[in-house]
Image (cartoon, rainbow, N blue to C red):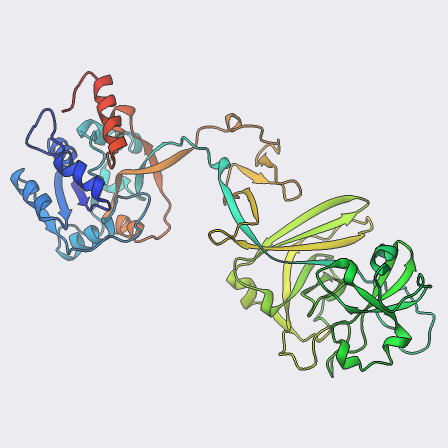
Length: 491
């Protein structure tokens, strides 16, 4: 079997250590040659060195090994399962006819200086039943792994806040004590009128039961200004395109009344395609309302319809259902296909007359239907992956297929199988991570893996006496300590 050694240096420190440090048992040979010289003694195996450094190629030829002279180029990001430069080396080995697509092959990292024929034999023994044929067994690549010092449950996801919205369910049974067309309104929601009206310019006394138009929505909540609706109608409605009308329910509650001043040809509540119906609308819009919540008439499932300008692939939509002081959270991470399959719904509510169209996009599924309990209101939190220096929230990273899952309502980690809250990493079996030291497989599969393709993998654990990667001064100290523990010395 061919043992391919891609030798590319990414840092000057790594290059200096591997090329200049002599071995105690071979004073004239640097550490970069240790693994390939050891594995050259493995029966039936042929080390091949691929590098862009002339001194490495000369050293390999001095040891009687075939070489692949690579173009001088910094290797790409590569794969965590293989050493740097593996993609270039494997592609050239294929193009030169050194290996065939289905031929079994091993890729070895020269920085793992303690690899030897015993390590290779143990790896094959861990993967193959006794007496089996290597060519028939390698159905998928196998990579060396090591026990993770940091459990993945400790990983954090850094998020940035994109936007928020508070939604209140519509109340189809509410009837206005007035003439004219019935305007859609919400259920009552908590609203402390005395606090907001302290600085109201138009009101000289506490309001009576009735309709009040919100004429401005500034960042300072005390700056909200209301005017009775009959007085608001005396103004040019076009001047108040951000108007939201509230109904004074009592001193602690209000209803949102959807405005009648909307773009021509549209309605306060958009007509959604069957089987969807509008369930909840924004409480106090500022500029254009961001989203609506809809319910499937047949199944009761919930979905959001969101303004196109506020959407992007990868957006995390977190919908919270609030009732009787309790909160239930459902989450949806938008994939590109979610946006491609969604519909566009025109909605001009609360938008300036001369603004560009910003239709609703949906349905974007966010979770199952709530139970029969009454929902007081909904809140929507939209999050994105944070850019450097712009982190708003740090949460446990949720990995696909993990041994645990996260409770959206509390962000606690629970065991995916038992449902028990995880109180420590000791509640899980050991977790392994790739170390990039040794990979076995067919040439075409290893090349695909090196190029970043996702493939099913097998793993094998290298024994402690075979594990030591030297790519820094600290790695060199670790090598010296390990050799002393094994009763050997290094110069």
